[in-house]
Length: 193
Image 1 (cartoon, rainbow, N blue to C red):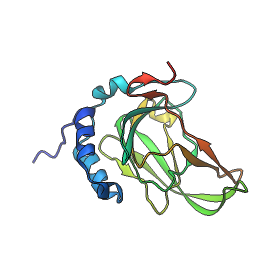
Image 2: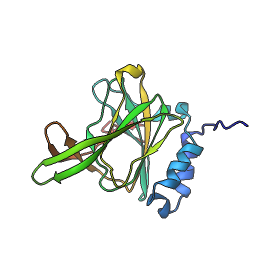
Image 3: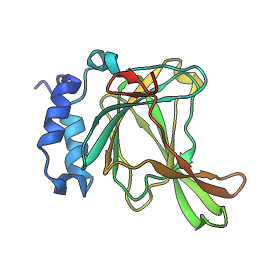
């Protein structure tokens, strides 16, 4: 029996996302299943991909009141800050390359005071056949494109309810604080150009 799943275009994936009811974004199972059943063809992402040697890029593909869909481009060795998603659900897939997702447990957090205590709990690999959903009960994590993988990667992120700030953490320094989030491109066009 052939269990291979045929990739779909990003436009087909967006069409399916837009059909989903609000309830699909409130729990992780339905969109996680959609990512498994409809992996996105990386070639269809070409208009949305922008690379930067200094920092990963955040490229908006689609946005509604219920969700935003972002392609993040990772050069070899790039890594995100440890961060949360403002109590929103998040689903991630890697249609190009593979990435590591390192999850953390927050033992203490005082955003106003800028202090925290977090510990790493697990690391999972994300690739074209293994999308992942951020655990709503333990949502703090970071994404890594390790040098030993020796390739660029693209991750597709679906966030329930768009948000433009998040909390970042330093496990080593025991600090945390809120930052603003920005897009590198919106709908294929460089922001500010």
